[in-house]
Length: 449
Ligand code: GAP
Image (cartoon, rainbow, N blue to C red; front, side, top):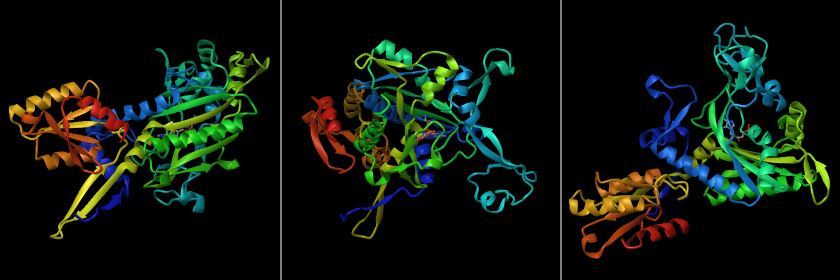
């Protein structure tokens, strides 16, 4: 057979439909017409998302110098005054007085060039007004201003306010880090592009507390560490790059910042932010809470407010990058000129939602009883999918499309040789493997993938 021509992902719509069809991602509240920019992770998506989180969590918290926390989404409202979010976390918005469209004035072409409405072209517009991106709600039964709390717009503040607690309970010495995974909420004005920018999303953030003066070096170290992480889990390096922030781009808290950008079908876009936040946050929390968050260095016998190097990536956005990077169509033409397309999600096996598919060649009891037993046994160690419907070729293709690294077929020879056929996703090579010791085989095959 001729070598396959490879076609990569060209737009998100391919992923949106595959995600819905195969159970990765569904539109939120779909039967009610959907809710703007909110998405639900389905049977395969929730497995894969858990894998994305596990990969990140282990990379962080299995180090001897990083601990993890899981802080509440709702925090004391003064946290957001101290952090600068009440005053500074906003976008400038303009209202069109004719068609009532509300849009951002700082990145809308028609407004920037001609001061025109992006929807109807009218020039009858309001002045830009700052619109805060935090979702507000009320705590307790009374909806007055004193009861206002916010859904956190970043997980980082849960780490800063627990700096003292974590340091005291772990007795870690600086430099050390605190990692957290959790939901964040932003009332984004221009969400979109599938799960790239949503109003509810999950962040994976780590704040690394260092001695002032060592921050520049740690900033560089974390840049390397994070890029290596992406390489390790199979993102193609040619689709990744650093984008340093210029002075005008820096967030209010940042001394230096660089984005890890990924080449999404919409172009190079931020995947992760790495920031030198100086001692901004701890200083602010000291000021607003009146509590001392200084660190005492017992060796040098000196006190200081640590600087923070932050790495912050959206879990949903990384999920999207993994999918976009992994998607490929292998197009082959046979001797008769007939074209065939194999869709493969070439996910790293740690990220793939299903590790092994178990496929009895026929629905006859003598095969399904063995296959079901294998499913039950292997399910103790791996995420398994069992499929006995349709031709074996079709079933292989179904697994390729969701990124399953191995398909395991029980056939009539199995009755004699107590072995199964294992078919590898990328090479489509098949080999015969004894049932005895299968779990060990799969473990090492996944490791050496
Ligand atoms: N604590 C720093 C911080 O939150 P950020 O650059 O605003 O920094 C970090 O966010 C990461 O969170 C982004 O690089 C992106 O991956 C993800 N993120 C931010 N806003 C998002 C949104 N509306 N939807 C999905 N992911 C988002």
